[in-house]
Image (cartoon, rainbow, N blue to C red; front, side):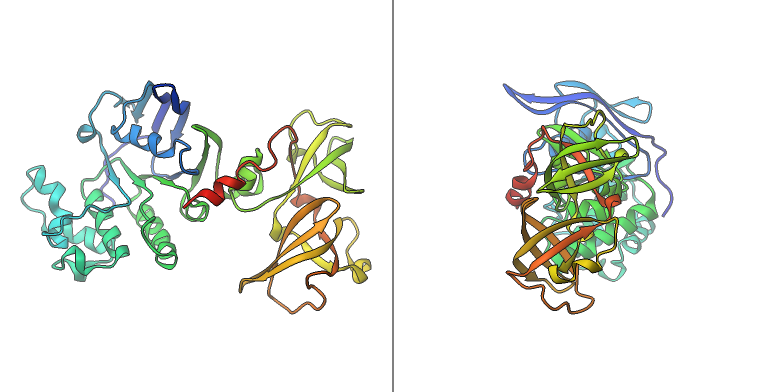
Length: 383
């Protein structure tokens, strides 16, 4: 199905939302490109759902405007905006079959000939054989697809998704992530998706806005956010980062050298905050999967030029595709390392002395004035 309503970017200009003395969303400028899959990601209470509801017209912004294309829709009620919303609770009509649930929006607008459009939607969500079933006869994932079809049949400019996969179990949720991405690619309209699940946002979205405390902490493509976090919150909230407190000993133009735990580490200058100078403090970061582990007795086998840190394995967890190690080191009390289970490595057991090593190119630097644990608690608190 390619017949979509011509639209435009979703533009939020200076929108904010306050409830008495509490500010849910601080003044925010945000552009969602037409035809993109855009995710608002953050922990509970970060302002992501409030932002979505202001786009939908379900909340009035305290300040600012909401525009779709060239049209300012800030004053329009929800039913007059060219948007539809899919919620976590699918709110299907239990007394109507799937065909009539999907047709509901068209019939409400006075459209009498709905058979062809409903059939197209059933094909889109791959439920062509389920038209005459009732919602209670479908699985949670199938009900979710019906809710998406019911929203898309109205040809909205923008589809808003508010934690739509939250009620599904993990395996089904992963299947539905791929399904939603396929549907969005096929119909080509703008999807704005709110989620607290980092994997979900990175799997589906072209662009992710990481929200924290009512503000956008960082905006970019999933790989850009993961590989180049600009704050400790993003580094910790999107996956796991090892953050090591360090002092800059050489701030050359191309490379920065720091000392941490009695050893030297190197990292690219462009992956450091602006204004880094010799003598300043820095948080040096590296993702757990970028690190290799070698028994201390084989330290000579580590290729020259790699960043190295010595330590002792404190704990290990076998999780199938990889083994996760926690290493105690002078550079950090609990450095995490993920090692793919490609081959058995003797000697990598709790208590073993090891060398952690990784490419300097995989190292990033963050402002040491930030909270080193920002984002960690948020992940743990998320349901």
